[in-house]
Length: 398
Image 1: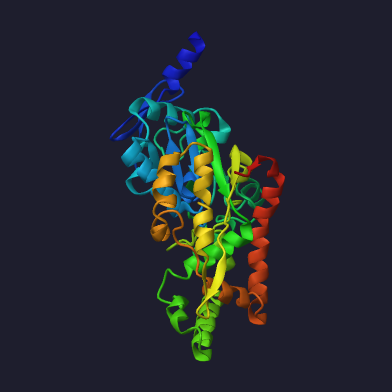
Image 2: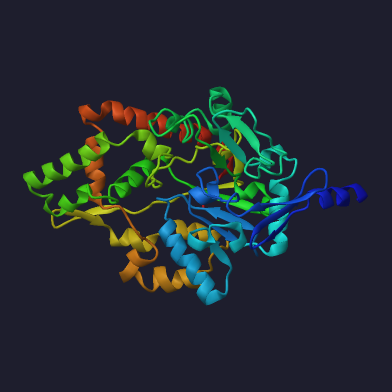
């Protein structure tokens, strides 16, 4: 106990508005300012995919896009406002740990980040390691980090995965040898979150990728769906098909599945198997994989396909899973899903992908001009299938 207290006194962390106060190995105090403790980047899984934290439950719930996260957000928000719950969504101003943790908890959190635990240390990717010291308190950017030379490809692959936002960006014109990047560990590896139970909602990887691809086409001036109102005519269909095809042809599969380049990120299509964190994937590290239920059916109506009202009423989708785990209560499900089915798209079934968009993308998958493009997409998405197969014992159907 005496040795443990002594070690805490030497390495002990305290956090305030200016940043983090630490003591070096020789007992000298120094500070790491907030600018160095910037939790941006795609390595932090809870930041890369919509994540909700409940401190009273000691639960981390990660809901990748296209598994009903908009509906989940609605229900958890209602739990907070009407049932005094404590769900935190890691978004906007709440994307930093100080938005959730108390001062005492923050000190523990950063104490763990700067401990001797190699798995928890942040990673600094550098163009060259010469002159880089991890115990030099005058260079807080590197202090207490794992240093990786970008040019050591085998090391990079072992850490982040062979195909990742690190490796493919290095092959682009945006990378240069002096570029440095910081990667922080997932929150769940650090105290007090390391004691939490972690849940990850999973969906068939290809289905999720296609659904995300359709959503990403919404986000830009080249949006093809502006033509879908005239889809029943031959000229309207051709405009819709050609516009969608053009977007795919000029978009790298890696940008969709991995991300990493400057500018907007296609986070609706990011695979869950990348990046790894020091060799481990989200599938490996999360405790429970919740099987996503998508039980909506389309039926013909006036020469078009529309969602069956019966399927909307018969299943609350992923909300049933939240109810099963006690993340929401029965009362809120009754209020919305059972008593207000006429506005289902505003709460229980938000952002359902229209049938015509699914049909266009299905046709595009048989387009010979895009054969190589689709093959590369499949290759990347297969990373998820392999990791999911290795962790199938964690999948829980609710």
